[in-house]
Amino acid sequence: MLLGILIQSCSKKESADLIITNGKIYTVDEANPIVEAVAVKDGKILALGSSSEIADYISEVTQLVDLTGRTMTPGFIESHAHLMGIGYNKLELDLMYVQSYDELLDKVAEAVSKAQPGEWITGRGWHQDKWLEKPDKMVKGFQTNDLLNQVSPNNPVFLRHASGHATFANAKALELAGINNLKGERPGEVEGGEIILDELGNPTGVLTERASSLVGKLVPAETPERAEQALTLALQELAEKGITSFHDAGSGQSTIDLIEKFKKEGKLTARMYVMLAGSDPELLENWYKQGPRIDSADHLLSVRSIKLFCDGALGSRGAWLLEEYSDRPGHFGHETLPMEVVGQVSEKAIPAGFQVNSHAIGDRANREVLDQYEGAFGKFPDKNDLRFRIEHAQHIDLEDIPRFGEMGVIAAMQAIHLSSDRPWAIDRLGEKRIVDGAYVWQKLLQTGAVVTNGTDAPVEPLDPIPSFYASVTRKTLAGTPDGGYEANQKLSREEALKAYTLSGAYAEFEEGFKGSIEVGKAADFTVFDQNIMEIPEEEILTAKVMMTVVGGKIVYQESK
Image (cartoon, rainbow, N blue to C red):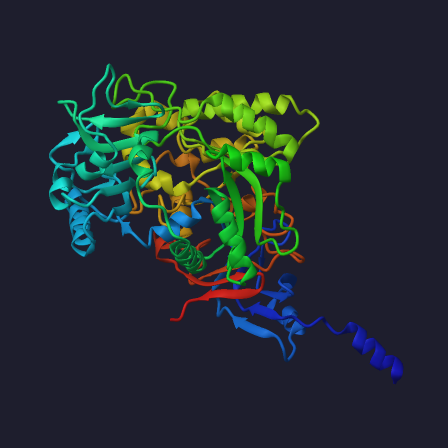
């Protein structure tokens, strides 16, 4: 009898803290791709299998979640976005959805009516190429501030382009910055940027790339209280959108300290992988000395990469090209950072243990960055698995595509940019350059390169579902064109899911801890109300996140 009791006690399954059951669970594990249920203990995956198998792990302390047939995946990883920008976007004018210049003016006028005399009006999200109706007067593809001056004659206005690579200011803001009647041999030119001028040589209010700082530096600094409010709103947005891990694409010490504060207070509801802002040399030097912060305990906050801005965006014609813009002859975009700096930073980063992630959109920027990486790699032949990244990798010359796989450079891309930009990007690049090297996800995968996905929020909305949709359809969010743009570059749904999960984990050296649903890995999950892996593609955009789980804790649950 004693022997029987002993055998029974030894065979009893370990009790789970959480069991999620009765669903279709995509694991992103090729050896075990789909299961029905998962058991979690101490924030890690304890077991997975059929619902009946996992029922053995239930005890009186187990929390049960019945998916009722819904779909669960590994937690989605946002591989390139701007954490504080997401929060601040909710605290100022949100211009992402305005469909005309008139609508933008209405929002500014409303803000002016509520503002104190002389108070700055700030906002972000406008994109003139997405407006359904263009203003009558346009200069170099942008609106002018004549009407903006009328609705806000006394309050300075500073509105950032959706891409973050251009700004729109009224006359009052330009006056405060000393940008009035420009003179000189080449008025309007700024190193790494441009002040757009009209035919009479007067500023139109549009500033591109580094020229934006002429006005931006005058905008009052954010307060600590407002920063906490912005971070709270950003974390709420991440949870609601099913994001369990987040790659913050370039922040300073104050943001890192704030995230650390939230972590200590138990308010950090997503895992953070922070890239140091490469625009701050003093910040980088401090971190070279102390080395990366790799959070191997709870994996909530790691700092082991550097973000460099190397060119602009296609929308503002700031992306740095090998050949002139098709719709602006003689213009090649901007190198926003001397390329030798990329090499210098890389040569310091490698021995210090840091990854380098360079923003490069145009084909020349991509080539130049790859050249600098290659030179740095050659000086440290004993260092491998560096996982340097190019952020966006939006337009690449045919000769340079194979170099991603050969060099092990990660292409940190955002599929939603294809959906939003492709209808007008052909005007910038022409058909041949678009077909050969723009948004070439399959061509990059075929070189052996790792491709990740994200949104670049607040450039685009944080929601991963539209970016997943763009990955597998290569269509606009309106469902055009039939068959998608350059359809041979579509991702399969399995490839698209991996780009948003396991590949994102790989891009931050965490594929052994998260990114797939396997025993021993983090219990980070995203639950959808529909099966995004099987429903007709035109229905994907109707899918919603129902639950977000981080480390075995439910951080968001749809109330309906």
